[in-house]
Each structure stands twice: as C-alpha cells, then as structure tokens.
Image (tube, rainbow, N blue to C red; front, side, top):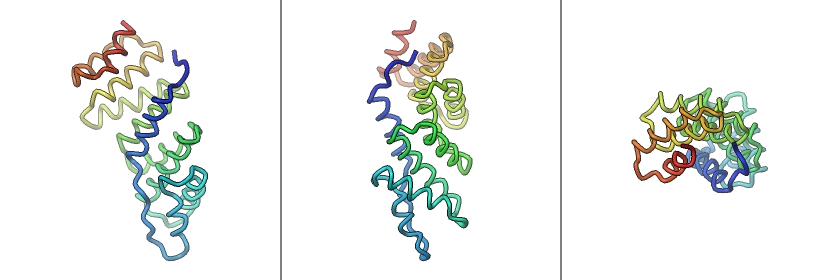
Length: 178
C-alpha cells in the first residue's frame, strides 16, 4: 500500500518532531554545558546525536531533561532517516512523560516502516487521551488503510471530515478509497 514515501510526508513527520523539541537548558557547572548545548535542535544531526547521547549517559539527569534529550535525539535520527532509532528515542521520552505530539510523531514513523498496527495503537492512545482532531483521525485512517482495514479507514476519514469539513487530505483519502 505504501509506495514511495513523499518528501512532504517526511517533512510533516520531522516538523511534528520539531514542534515538540525544546532546547535543553544548560544547568550544570561540571562540564555538561557543552553536552547540553550540543543536544539541541538546529545543530548538525551528528552533533545532536553525540551531545544527546552524552546527556542521556549522565547519572543524575532529571526526568524532564532526559525526556527532552530523547526527543531531540529522536528528531536528529529522523533527519538522518534512522527511523527505528528515532522511534526508540521517542518511546523513551513517552516512558518518562506522555505527549500526544510525540505519539503522533511515533505513529508517522511506524507507518513509514510498515508497522501500521503500532501506528494505529499510538493514534488510538491520542484519541483516548485528548480531544481528537481531524489530523489524528486522518493519519489513523491512513494506517488502517495500509493495514488492509478498509471499513475502519473510511470511518476514520469520515470522522476527520466531521471534525474539519475542509480537511482536503481526509477528503482525498476517503474519495480515493471508497
């Protein structure tokens, strides 16, 4: 079902990740400032990965900083198309503190590697945790479609259109697969 992955989809996944990445504040005077500075969005991916790996190896790092380091490194792995490593880091952040935005990024990556059932599970968690929006139902509909669950996909595309009747992506998806 998934053919060539469009650059727009990769950009959407990466942009979703960037929306949740907050720069890590340097808070230690014991030489970790450099690692914290290197573990930030906007650095070259290799620098970010190295910096965040060092931050994550610190024994006394507080949970919010650890979660941000996982998210930031996950974004760098996404930029380098290392999908499985990005997913692992985003899941590491989720184990510390749940974020619907991170779950949305995980679902997009799951779909990219053909793990549609995992994507459906992530998106269902979002729907159950927060007020769902058209984008979540549209993505879950696409995951259902890729998994061969056509009736469920149409139901989700319809729900996306109910929530946002002007959502052209949901309208296109529903029209193409009815």
